[in-house]
Image (spheres, rainbow, N blue to C red):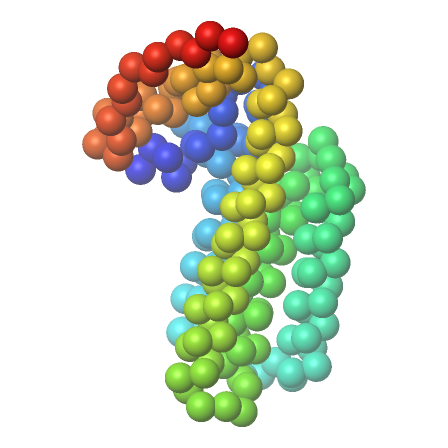
Length: 178
């Protein structure tokens, strides 16, 4: 899955703290640290049922603490620090699972728990996607190759991988004259 592994532009403007390289494979830091955290916590919950041992007040404190970490990350506190970035991605995964588990503790009908989970998941995903797209455009719009986007140098490698694996079909784009 080439897009999941590395979906950030591969140009100089995005190379700083957006991905790590392991054995020549570029991995998105956010996906590589957040998704395994989520999966690991869900698996541990399924095996050990640890969540029932945690008081609700502590669960809310975890969600509150993680929320503050995410606000700091959004405000670029610690920008440039790889350690801070890794910490925020792991915290994001912990917070995501904690919110879902709190939803399922609510004293409401099961169907509402699933509806709230669905709304939370897609609202959070949409918000994160919007912020990422806005920030990427803010960087890319200052690039000399912006007129060619997404056929610019930074995205060419990603598009080629996506096409190779059958995710998209790249067609030549007409040059626009202004």
